[in-house]
Image (cartoon, rainbow, N blue to C red; front, side, top):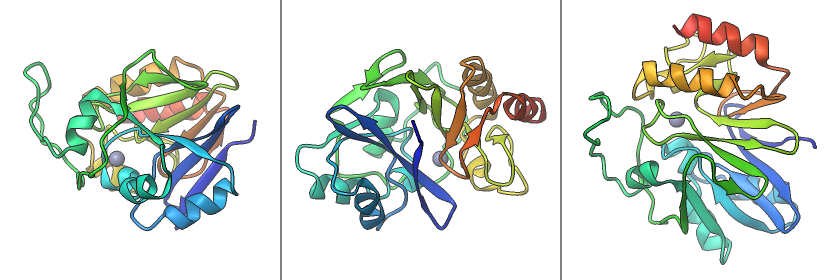
Length: 219
Ligand SMILES: [Zn+2]
């Protein structure tokens, strides 16, 4: 199944995932991306929006899309739903690290929060905290495409966001807790994905070796 990537400026991505009942949109990119997203959908119905995390370059067009698409489901982890509502408090058991990157919040609220192991159509929700406290990835169990959000970036080479990649520093600079990203990067590698579809950069086929190298550099 071909990966349907939508990109703004070649830098920030969203994805359309085909399901029997319509499309799932993974992330919404920066503000003013509605036209690009609807044009990529080509008239097919977007049934649900699944968010990897609450940073502004992933939720930027959420409110505009919810206004445009009547009845669309909005799915995000319970933890990042709080950041979507601009609740910036940390939980007692969490690393006491500074929340970084832009959290503009949104008026939209999730119609359902999702947790690891749950399904969004053909996508399995995979916990991958670290870049944000409640970051999740989505694994398409039909073809093992991994929508990895910002746990990995492929812009300027496959890298984890545990450390700042000098060739594309943005996602690393927005990371909350690097050591937790690294653990999540290992957990995603263990899924043995067939392709890596990140929030930033191109889709990478057969990414195992590149992920291993990225983990080694991120340690
Ligand atoms: Zn991010």
